[in-house]
Length: 467
Ligand SMILES: *Cc1c(COP(=O)(O)O)cnc(C)c1O
Image (tube, rainbow, N blue to C red; front, side, top):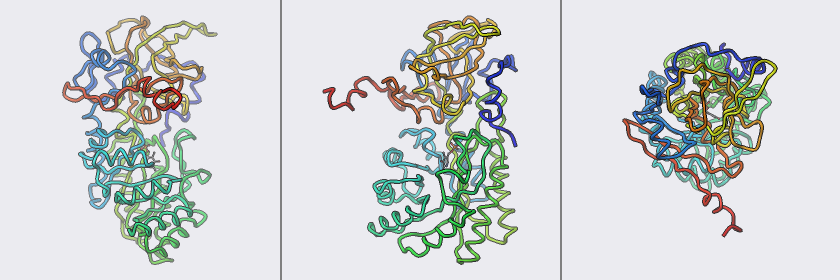
């Protein structure tokens, strides 16, 4: 099984980083949006729009999305995962990045959407996504969130605890509707990824234990409640997964519980939802399985497992988030200061940008690694070892820990960090009262504002004493 960069490689980061493996222009690699191109001047363009122009119009830091890249990934997932699986659904995991426009892009390309809060639900409702395309998650959904979901007709509620069985049943009964539910199973599989984002150890907050018999007990309780309809099982094993090995173990365990449920309760699981977690390349050397191969292997594993225990293959559902939007988005920053610091061996150049941990928390939270490039001009200078840091009052405010940038990097240059489309804007904060950056989408040479930049007035509007 291939390891995630934040796993074993994370441990190497204390050592001297290697010089770049490739002398190719970094923006030519598969880490960058599909439409990324460099002009002769060295300026990067995305979707036919130059980043210098975009920075002048929208300011920096700026999230730029290649709309066609998002659409293309969504189409690829729909065609790969729904082939020979007509009753299945691919839900886009909205938490990776969500806005009204983004919800419409993925829905237009054939995906449903998985929401995990009332706020995410409100946005997809505003986008006009019908309830039968939606699924709701959460290990502690509020009464209000459950009620809103059922009123809107969200087609699947994923049950995460025994408490929630009673809660969802009561609200559905009160509304005089039947809630179609999945039971989230903790299958005891740890996907190879950074510990903080793995979600299928037994000792974690999500789901009901397969091993302890809690999944079977949940199905027993659900079956007794007329306002609930048990549809099937859910399993999500982690994030940034590069091959199908983890899914193989998870699928085997899900199939074996489904079999036990049929044997002891006579209840058929009509649907398996195997979650998301399909990985993307953050560094040029990252090599996740292609969408098609991953889909074929997972479906093949489920078919084989079902056949071996003698149950019909249910509809298969999936919830990719990062793999849909991750590569399509980049973050554009302006360099503000360049500072040399002596090390025991050589020196390091600290390149400070006009954002940081408020627009990308993944580096400090997970030790995530990113590719970064000078994108406003050409440079033939030798690359030097840099650390790209933000402007926050925190020494851990690092955007890219080890970056190779041209030796003449200087204030006023624009640099871009690749593959920030997932979990950057959606995890952004106002730390240091910094307004969150805007999101712009580009397509066919035309840019469009998707989320505007926050202003000081937005920040002050929350404070009743500011009036
Ligand atoms: C986060 C999450 C996903 C999406 O994960 P990605 O790694 O972005 O594909 C899907 N399902 C569940 C339950 C999740 O928590």
